[in-house]
Image 1 (tube, protein in one colour):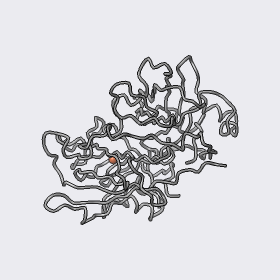
Image 2 (tube, chains in turn red, green):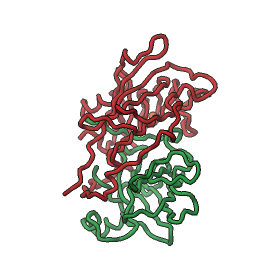
Image 3 (spheres, chains in turn purple, blue):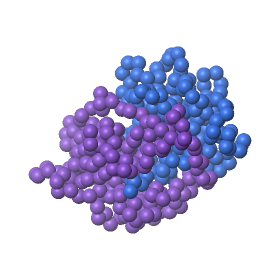
Image 4 (tube, protein in one colour):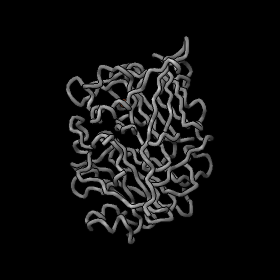
Length: 222
Length: 162
Ligand SMILES: [Fe+2]
């Protein structure tokens, strides 16, 4: 199993929120609506929404980065014109969210949310700043490794994926029950972006690559 | 190898919701229905930080992130309120059900279910024990439907394998 089991007790919030009964397989036919997915139009997503450093009057504090990659299906085919949404903490590890109580500074020039549509090769690209690690109350001295939340649509509603992208070499990985909820080490590795010199822009920003591979489109049962 | 899922976490409010995300059709639309309910956990407590996505599967309809004018969408989003409740206004679908995904802190991969607006012979419903079948049936009151999501425990909603 690639996905984490919903009951992963080291992540305490799962204990009362994970279903106790196994999910039910369902048969599909041409009218099965889970075989289709919403389509978002280019007119709905502004070009500037992919640049999280240019949403305010000034520039945000932090290490400017470029995060790019492709959205693919399991057979390696690109998923074109699909919506990718990201959200993250600022460089100090603080979210622009009223319930985030971490006593780290907010940045008036950083909201930390962006979206774009993939191009004809399934490629997306965001400009942002590197998020900080932040504490949470799961256990004593619990810290989340720096991460960017990703939300991706495929061509079927059953391909819908929300995940988190981590940065290579973070020493917090072994201590994070959310990342460790993915049991297969090779699968866990798929959550870690790769530093990429070709994406890095001289005198300007470090570059990271992160491909998102969605599960197969369910076939219609005959 | 596919990319594993991770929880949506508690802090998606500045990233995923958008204006009128739950209003998939304008008020007064001739086919408008509302679907409301509450998300609760294994202790029966409301889940105040879930995000629900509704998909009616209408081929050709778009997601419609912007609601300028009379936008009609087959897709909607609603973050639960502090009492765990949610609401959608959508057009009555062609078939008997709509698809629902539930994301939340503490849910490592979104759970998928169906809201049946009519109790009809159906390959999925007919394979379930009556008590479990009932968890997929919305309660109708005119053009309003009520559908609660129980993530765990007594009356646990039937979730689908995907
Ligand atoms: Fe986070």
